[in-house]
Length: 415
Image 1: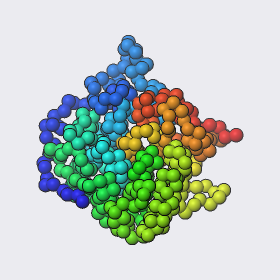
Image 2: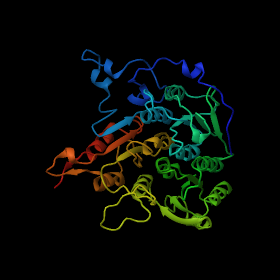
Image 3: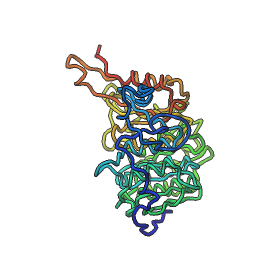
Image 4: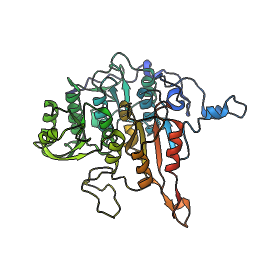
């Protein structure tokens, strides 16, 4: 269940009277990949302060670690910093109209709830995600929240912050709280909140594993884009909270994300009591993310262009000219942190790697098969273009992998 506390007034000095932030910031973890700290703002240096006489000028500019011609890295040393960086990339909050209406604070001790909260990025709530433990807000989250300065969401009852589970109260901001006794109940409560804001339940639901997070991660980006909720099962069956949530969807289409080794066929048999069940998945986390990125229901006609169309489910990413979000499968909270990128801007699926130093063959083949734009005699300016987001510092995804991704996304002459 969720509750909406009384209006707590405007931002207090704890959030408003932060240091003045320059229009273009240099951050250690979010933009420069400096390690595991969650400090967001580490000084007043700006990109424009890097001059020809500056020591280590090339390194300070951040290329190719931060950006290449076809990629941008959010180089957090941990998911808390990544979430702060993504939120500010989606909502720069430096001019009128660029602030979010509301911000979600998701728990770091409950990756299932964090992934489920990605649905709150979809319309009409449009809430980017920040992360926190239970005791106090990390400095990266505090600084990002101060800069974001959410304006208040009519869809969320006027709230400026949506607190998910066991995260701290935030003095001075109007807050809505979504609570649950366990990850299943909390995901179900998030679904109820989202459905209430929309005025109806979704016809499509993603069913993910609560046991193996790497297979559940791609659901976050889709939830942020589509507004379809993420509910959880385990290898033994369908927990009571999930069953109750599914009843409210009244015979929805249930898309089970993951192979039988992760969510057994017996669980699908139980799910069929609540709707039409279809499986999307592959045997390892990287291939599973590719399967989800290319999936569409109803299926695309063989030999014809494939795209997401109104009324269909799935990214149907089988052509170039899109955004893509690359994550490390060992950091499930990064899926929640990066979900706003899938729900805005380039609108791209989340793809996983399992080794920071290598692009898995399934992901490599996906880009080779579907993502390389070509151009004809009209020249490259007439081509479609891709953009890749790389989430995490060099310990999560190496610079050589980023460089390889940049090359794969480059428009090339058609043969």
